[in-house]
Image (cartoon, chains in turn yellow, red):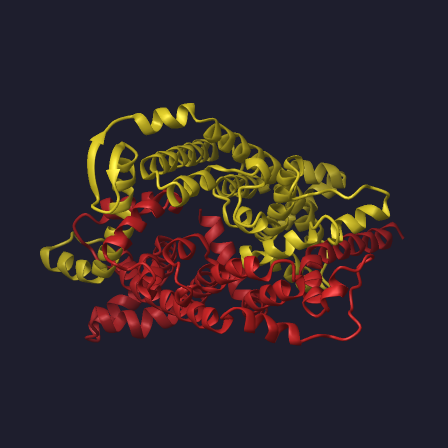
Length: 296
Length: 273
């Protein structure tokens, strides 16, 4: 049925595509090229948009800058702190939700609600929950005789606070996807397995887990990429600072600071390229891995 | 017997979990209705003696939240509708029409989805400044008018409509344009609604870009305005929480009303990815 394109059919299609071409040309394709170029600008005048020198200086700077190393390290901690727990908790909740009918919708609503809320607004609420003297969390801890923690001003606790909030905000999304996955598993597998004498744990291990692996893989990858890009909640939680003593400085926050506060466009662009390469690498791993190891 | 205990345990755990998820919202609402001394009470109280709805008007007086709200509404609606229009046209071309470079363009645009938006913010800011668009609605709206996610989702939906319908319409003398708007779009209603809601939520909550391209109060959207407000309100947490509630509530209502579309949208798009 597929016909070969002709001049006429092509022209028609281009008219339909024109608005997309214009906007994405200016605000997606051009900036992609420009960002790569910009990362090699070493002398740049923002006002005149004139570049007087190119080179690898920005990358050398990143290579040597302890703050960038810190940002990479923090981002990695964030990924490791957020992703496995989010996937695990949401899997457990989805499994539980899958077993009940009554009130199911109400529970889903509650678990998913954080996902639709403004990160900035809810981070503000969390900063109030984390308040050292009057916050709810420290009050609850005091009931167990635990001393008040200065969550947001103690460099040791800033990251755990950020991780807690991020997990809370992301659970709903993963739960929804797990529920879809569970829904797609054919019930006859379980029936046959039960007849064959498999117990609940064996059915979970040999049916649910393998058949769910594409979803698990998907939410892991989206989770990792999402965690790499965290910015809003840091900004709002720590009131426009990357945490006490840079303790919550992430790659995107670093990019923002270099760009917006320090006006070092070249360095900011270079850190953006690094972020892009990392995400590209994760995506490529996803493609390879999902072909090889995910059981359908 | 064990089954009953199991079900009870299940509900018990789910209830605790759901309650934990809702604590920040409850704490926010509760604080927003307290007096200043009540916010500092230890142990904290959940229901204040008198519900002080005045906090909301007080917050409105301290910062131009009405203006922020209008800005957010304008930006969100324009972005969503403009994006929908552009996406429908582009998705139709990719799904139904044949043109030179089709495969190449498809892969090219699919590939750009991998590029993190954060990386593009710098050069987009330079572009917006060069076009003298800083502090304008245009700066808040135009860069977001193309969503490849929306285009690809719609393309998929359009392709699921049987070819026969297209040829029948052609035989009846309908133009591509009429087929698109009178047959394809109405048939894809639920997909379109899902895309729109997800975009509304995204636009409403978007922060980094509006923060960068607005420094004039008149063009701030709600999240940026709220963030600026935190430095003015200082430790008046009842006002801060009232303002936060005001930012969050519209999306909560939207979600409660159109839940099934949102869930369907996420399930579909997530699974394709």
